[in-house]
Image 1 (cartoon, rainbow, N blue to C red):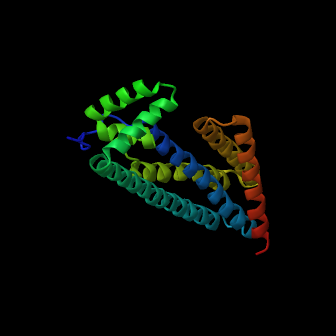
Image 2: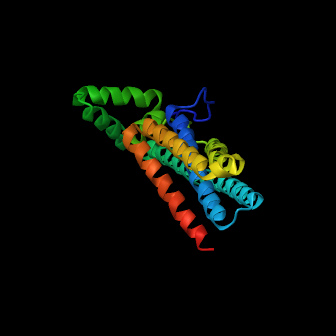
Image 3: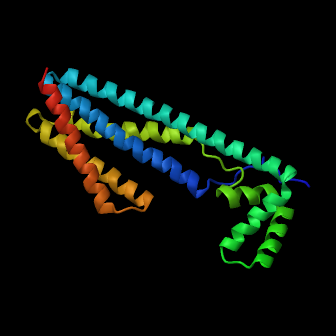
Length: 232
């Protein structure tokens, strides 16, 4: 049996691919905000030297951005390798156990409420036209040839972590001296509320809960790091 060629070019990203990049971006932004403000509060509590505070915050922003990017690249690369291994496994099963693959597709449609006889006809028809694409979609909910792109996730994390870290960095280092602390607290609260909102929308969760949770975590992060800074 001639199997479907998997090397056809993608015309556009699937929704899962787009959501993966957005997820990486939201997580990167949140990490950028909290790690940078943590360092800024610790250092600012220990010294009033503005240049020292700025360099510490900037260094942490860059370190966080590249750390998030490399972590996303490694994670998504592993996922991509796993997806490719699954496709190769199904390619071999179509050669060695076609009856089993046919039964799997039939069972899928039976679980959707289609009768046994009709499910068998559907399975035979699909496997005669696009066998590999069909079994991969039915058994793993994957679109053949559409693999998660580690570079998209890495650049999304790199950009968003940098963008997120800029909020506390600019507030702490460029606000007037008497407004540094309240300006930074407000900037961080607004920023993490926004990432909480976006994460809830992407995950179809409760927006209010996500926003409140993120703001509370942000406030706790600032308090802990300020306290640590006062010890030195």
